[in-house]
Image 1 (cartoon, rainbow, N blue to C red):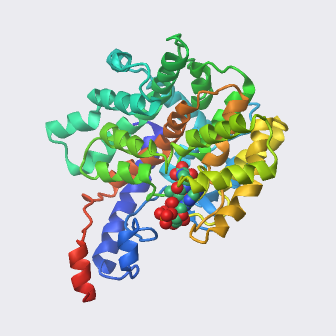
Image 2 (cartoon, helix red, strand yellow; image 1 turned 90 degrees about the vertical axis):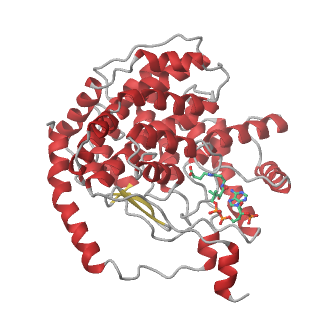
Image 3 (cartoon, rainbow, N blue to C red; image 1 turned 90 degrees about the horizontal axis):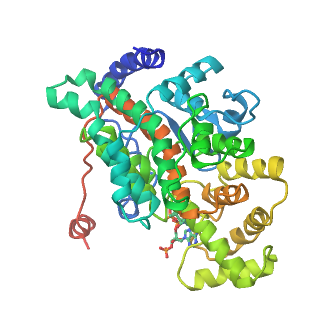
Length: 434
Ligand code: CMX
């Protein structure tokens, strides 16, 4: 058993017992009172599931096992000569709840490098899709094609015991995470670079190797990729990609099936696809105004027109957050520290000044502040990755870290099939006597 796996087992076994005891002793106590509005409006704010890896606070933003984004950037191990955390470290932290040291992170890098071989048929499946297929669709299909490799599914077929679920889930999760950058880079090079593919370099860390396979060798892009893949990894359990993965996994669908479902949710414009929508929206605005750096008045006019057309301003708003997303702030700091000036990134800063008061003035938007997607595309554009309909795939590669760590915990704690009750409007009306 590898050391990370052993460590996980040490943590999971006693907690699984404790959770059983909590449910037995306190299972009938109330966690909250829910209203008709809660039921109709996407269950926002209802506590309906357990997620060990991270917790979101409406005012402060995300904490991974108690650590904020600025703390992660400071405390997680860096690549030699690097300034941003290695995403391997955030996976380690989410899985075992402890900050890793450099050697522990290096071990995870090596572990994933050993597991990174993608079966040929997965590339064949991608190659059979029309070139214009959206990269997220290619990605989700490729993950499904890899399901042939599921050790969880094979063990289940042979009749594995419940106590072994987490073990096979761990193996699938580690293999999947190890292979995703290769699959994503293959889709990128196929779609935008005439099938000119780049072999992995096993000496590089997970994020740097991903940048390399995408075709970006500059140190700055590798640094950005480490930050990007760290900050997008998790956002507690209720967001669409995490919840979909958890829900599908609760049927004991294996990690490949569950993750593909999560990616189909991430591909929605109100969730992960917003990162491509932001760049599309900004590019359209600049084209229409025939400028590279608009004035605040011009931006305000454009925002108002967007709203009049019944569209959302992409990158703004959030179902839980009520302040500027610290993942936005981390990227803003990255811009100010390493890029300093770029018209497209400057436009993002101006939009940040203009949009919140306009959204606030509508009186119905609960959070007028920017989310992670408002900034991420501009940094990628700066380093030359302008194919913005690929951006959500980058988000997806990162999101695998959180949802896979959570899925391993789901199986270790014996979480059952998820099956909430629903009600008809007729039933609601009866209850309300109307
Ligand atoms: N622009 C215009 N209108 C917005 C808005 C925005 N950025 N954000 C919310 N609204 C509107 C909603 O559409 C809703 O309108 P209706 O009452 O007419 O239906 C109203 O304001 C109230 O919405 P809310 O309760 O404040 O927001 P929700 O929790 O329902 O939705 C979110 C949250 C993120 C889907 C929404 O803010 C949005 O559509 N934002 C733009 C898309 C985006 O950036 N998504 C990425 C989120 C982060 C991520 O998952 O990656």
